[in-house]
Length: 266
Image 1 (cartoon, helix red, strand yellow):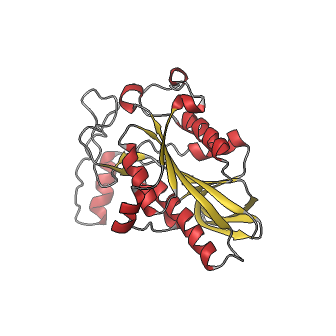
Image 2 (cartoon, one colour):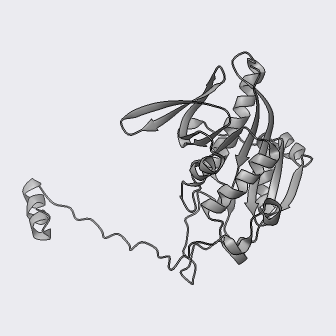
Image 3 (tube, helix red, strand yellow):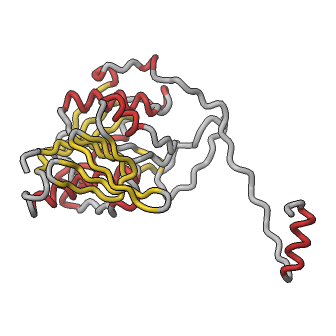
């Protein structure tokens, strides 16, 4: 195949999925100080798929396009460098760290992230963006769609399988009551779902090799984004859900019906 894939994989540093989130003392957000962070699981799946596309191409170049470059990008505080190193240890060729102080300015909103990614796509000459359908901290599920709109590119969201037929990208996605198959030509945006693949662990040799891979440091200003124009929403209050009340056992069906009548449910 003549098309060469230049893939962009955006990644985000989030609270580890195994940690139970706690509301901070000011009730303005989730407590992040002293909490373990890791690579957003959906972004990890996106990166794995980009790497698998390269591996498939090496096995059969007649069916799969060559992957010439896999670029990981993240915006956030200095510790975002950790997840970018992890991304390169998994298989990304290089990375860009857009430095931004989340403690001072708050989390970047989806539209701001999409605008940043649009600039990265254009400056780095990407023709395929694979990103997680959402991050597990804000669950917005908006960035991929916004990016497709800004670039005027076709999009396939919540992909459970990605393939190629000729010069077209074929994406299968799960919908209510079945599956949907989409086809589009490059350039394209693909967002990933949990069933797409199971990400690999970075091996120790690859972790060591990742230290030698290139990580560029950039700022928001390098991509024409001003901090003063980023915040469009304000979080008023964050509260934990009320504790669930304990259930009650009944002896038989008649007892259940009587209890439901007492509660006014029937």
